[in-house]
Amino acid sequence: MPRYATLFVANPSMRATLLRPILGLTVILALSPSLGAFGDSGHRVIGRVAEIHLQNSRTLAEVRKVLRPQETLADATVWPDTIKNPLYEDGDTPLFRLAHPAHDTYHYTNVAFQVPRYDLSLPGARTTDILQIMRECTRVLRGTSKAFTPREALRMLAHLVGDVHQPLHSGNSFINASGALRFVLPEGPTGWRSTTGGNALLYGPQDRFNLHSYWDTHIVNLAMQQDDVATYAARLVKEVPVAPGWTSPGDPDTWPERWTNDSLVYAKAAHQDIRLTTYLGPDDAGRVPHRWRIEQPAGYDERSRAAIRIQLAKGGYRLAAILKAIWP
Ligand SMILES: [Zn+2]
Image 1 (cartoon, rainbow, N blue to C red):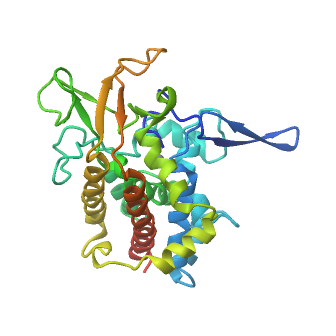
Image 2 (tube, protein in one colour):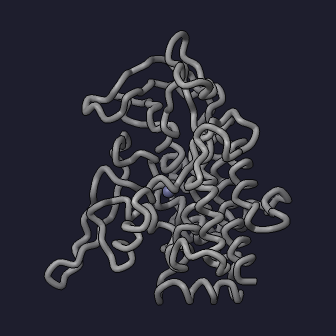
């Protein structure tokens, strides 16, 4: 999801589906713009890939006990984005929002894509960023923390394992405040500006698209082509072999950091050869202070599609792995 979706949504193609019971009827409202992240499709694919890896396991039986009857792991992945919409309400959500008013900031970390590895002391890292919240959710499900209910923790974890594999949720970019435009590290109190995970890097007709949405939704749609979630997930499991680097040794508490560092490699590639052409200043509503126009290099779609295919397959595999570690 756009990290700052409530402030800045440049991609009008995104949709949220809001379910509201009215006079006994369920009315489905299609809202635009919306708060989908990794698009719903990316998250659901990762949830479905994990289910395939967990077929007929005790782990999946334990997962089902936490979820509602008929609710799949793929369904569970999208709740943390759905509840960013302030109009959305369900029985699970009011107490969660009250306890976690900044829940919409749990979905990413803002360390610079150039850093070799994540560290909590880096600018952009937080004690409530994606990596730390994944660790906390795992502790809740293993019975050593009460920061969330098990149901909240499972749905948050299933979502965030997806988000961390979206390169721009793991590596932010910063641009120098003066001189020829270039990506820089956020060093010193001034002299650099945040692109908010690529949300402020615009391209296309009337600058209507942004690089964050490109990685959340556009490239996922390009990769899926005409497949639905179930078909594409099955295809990924069949066609993308599990690589040694997907598996994490040791304590699951250390896995989210490994996954963030792995995703930083993809964040570097996502910014490679991007041309920063124009500084655009704030948006008309004055809600986004800095925006830039970019140009993607030749072949960007092809290389990004190959990358996201691996990230979706890997994200699903790793979601299954951490759930297995919780419920062996
Ligand atoms: Zn998210």
